[in-house]
Picture (tube, rainbow, N blue to C red):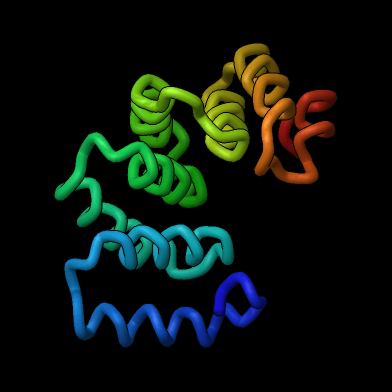
Length: 140
């Protein structure tokens, strides 16, 4: 549903699924991530992804979502450690993960490191259409 452009319907379905399985960490992660993409209910997203991290603290996917929730909440300093962990435990980080890492580095006052990571991300799939402008000018 979400990928078909119907976020509200997807969120209703996620809520219904969590009534049946309140500890389903895959649903909790996906719901959290989609809320972040929509920049909605960030407190709820943080609560849900925190449950995932409590159950699987070494899961790179959940750590990425956790870092991205913190980033969207403008808790840039708190977002750095989980994202560093993602980079360390991922054998081959995706373009999206690297782009997130670059964004977090930039917001933590490390623009040159961010630029290098964005350049690395550009060579992979799943980067945003903003990657070139980030490399050229930083975050806007």
